[in-house]
Image (cartoon, rainbow, N blue to C red):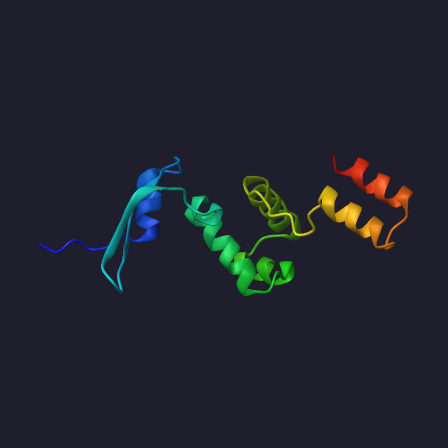
Length: 125
């Protein structure tokens, strides 16, 4: 009897929202299997309903008005759900603080004043 791949939704239903770890990954193209302990990406850790919500949000290019139409709910309901999902996710810093070395290099090149360098270093210890 051939084993069929488990649908992601079935796996999510089976775990009932409890955390789990993937211990084996098989690359179908090369039939190579990798064993270890793999944490799921954050979006995969969301429940099925929240995953569908996020996919719909991306598909409608973040239009809350379109989300209201798709889900048949009000603006505050969409915002509330987005805020709840947002609190469950860790966000990548898109504008990281400069390293101390970067600040000192900019100071040496005369791109910033000593006061600006001190301010940057104090703001991001």
